[in-house]
Image 1 (tube, rainbow, N blue to C red):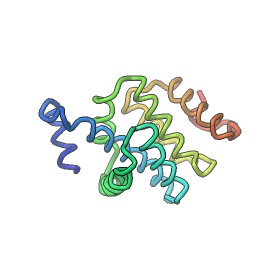
Image 2: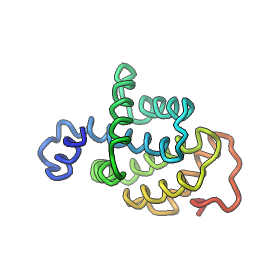
Image 3: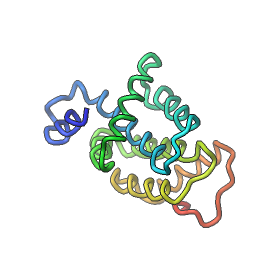
Length: 159
């Protein structure tokens, strides 16, 4: 898969028919990375990612486990998030990239709290996706509200 992702980055016009699969997988790998970054990738985060794959990334329910497994393998193998973020940046509109950021915040807050590693990762990914701070902060606030969580005082990303 990483070879497919690298090929797509180097030759963006070479596989337009696969873009849907590759963009879903790249977004899924970012979601997995958000779950992994704090060192505690539990079932709550895994369930949130599976739900987001079906509900928001429109992965067919019968394919969700395969996409999740592939995304997890790629995220664990990758040395950074740049390759995944590049595909998402190039394949999605700004509104869709903000949706991806919102999904990432849902994974981060699946356990009810965002730690410094997670907040840092979200700042980096937002930058790589060209999502401005105010849109990143708005996505974060929508997730907090939807999950019924109080806004932590002074937490990074609340701009």
